Image (cartoon, rainbow, N blue to C red; front, side, top):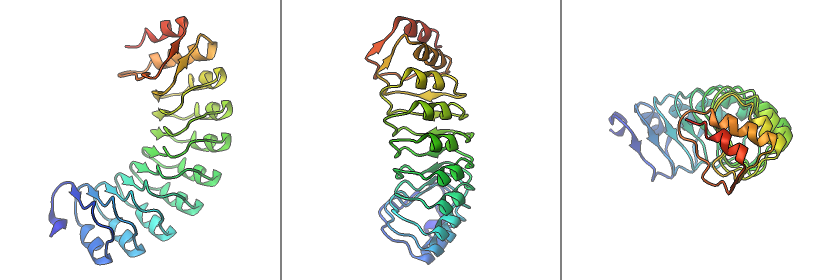
Length: 241
């Protein structure tokens, strides 16, 4: 009966889902919230992969590679924010997913997994990463599409240089500081950058280059955490429309 509901379906209280129930829900069209589900069988994953609409499965801590392979065929937003690890083969499977993919529970990413996810087409959420090696940044920089790395608390010059090659919106919302070289690198990035926690923009050449880049972005510009701002950086930002 619930599968006939038209529109978003919230079943966020469910802790388990039988294969038969998953098969029935696969016929539902619209957003499907299963955010409290703690486990998912391979058969249930195969059934849900046929569902037409966004799916939230944000409490799943682990999934078999077979289940990930099935879910990768799903079209629409896929929230797997509870996953704390991802095998290289699972990452390869998810690279084929079409739509927004949220993997905010991952705190680390192997080079092979990053290389695989660089092929994903759609928005990619990796906000659980707090650090990014230059090699991982280089792999992810090959993506064309929005990328959420808002959990990063530090960014090396080499990683910033790599990320400057990425094309699309780049969320670095937790970064509090950037070296002159890192700021200069990000100033070359093609796409909007979110730096809402940045505390300082000085009058160093790199920071001025970044300020000019930020000023060129269209729409709302959030720099609410700035504590200090150089005169030349302020002059650059004043040209933002």
